Image (cartoon, rainbow, N blue to C red; front, side, top):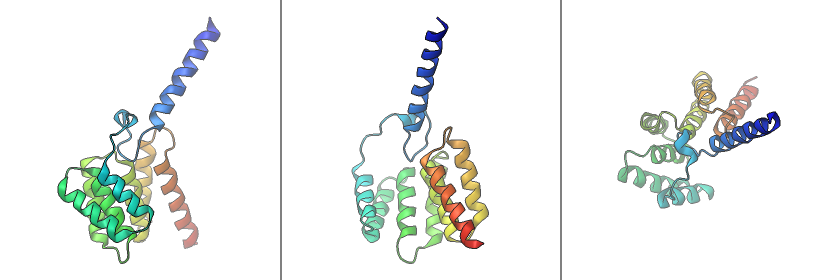
Length: 160
């Protein structure tokens, strides 16, 4: 009886861990474990970004933000495309990451990318604040936390 109870408990814990780990770049709460419907705009932005076609990705993201100003994902991707392109306008980058986080304070992708933007401008302390926020948001280590943690470590190593 005890062995059966332990195996049931272990199965429940594994299932909970799988559900929590399934969250996307967004909020990461229980709703993130549900599959999001496909978004053709996001898919087009991500395809252009995958090819490093930053002007096209930026145009698509800017149009997405204009059509849906309430989308944290669009603001996050627009800021990302601005940051990754030539001569980034960091004032716009920070504006759109902060808007994404205003719309969705638990948006893990926006926290990660905002931390990277802070590193890009030499603000290690602000980047570490985003890392601390991700540490709280991710029940188990998540991709966004791991990626920003590595970026912070690399930044610190270069500064030595």
